[in-house]
Length: 312
Length: 97
Image (cartoon, rainbow over all chains, first blue to last red):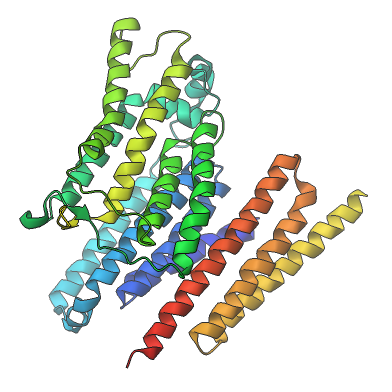
């Protein structure tokens, strides 16, 4: 096992170097996708299955798709960008900065106290109070619920950031290009066959998250992917971002989270505290409210800024 | 019985690994996109199929076994679709003047 682990570790470092020195943007992105899969493997080996699922869904899948889109957009300007040569001073400065960051990171890792400080024991001792079986869910939605709430809100800000690069003329319009529907195409076929299966798997990953690795984030990514698949096949279209139901859906999850937090302030004496005996239903309610919002945000982020007027 | 099952697992998983190796060699060595896709799908379909077949006797419940089979079927589906899309894009590129 040791040899396999070392092999994967070496492969990751080699791949990282390869991605950094790759001349073509597309090759670098393809390398990054493989990099995400290898990282997933590492997390599984470290028994962090929750992190592995997230890495596969967000790090490999979603970020990979975003980067492929970016690489496709950069294709027209890539030759010009490659022809540019930076000076020797820039090269040396970049190398020095890279080495400095690596050195600082190495020092930080090497000076970590042994054994590493950990709250795992406290979490394990108090997990019963949250009534969920998966300690990750317990931490994310009970002990550190504030972080999860802020995370959900940060995603909204990120989406606003994506939207803000839209030209004024198409503000409120549909994100992304219009995809052509080809009735004989394989994409239209898979966009009809896969979503029913994908929706079940997404809901399963969400539901199992209370007791096993999984959760709303990974589930929402799968749901978003299914929606995007139908959009890319031309079977459906992205809604204009000015739609009222869309805006309501985007804020519903965090608002429900805050409302349950305020209820905790009244009923249990602290913001985001759960009254005794109601922890599990409230946690499930938060996850259930957050999941559609997360799926919407992730899909819309991938679709990008509005490009077409809502009228067409 | 246990030994027979262990032997089955070893043979099937090794067979799967060989298909993965052959597929990777093909991916690296074959001259154009279409032949490379051909090599790749063999690795995905047969390689993963044999690995999962070999793992089936080792799982403790029917549900887990079912999940493994579903994983294989989904990979089959996505492999078939992805290679069709890639082949189509390549063909379009070749037809372009």
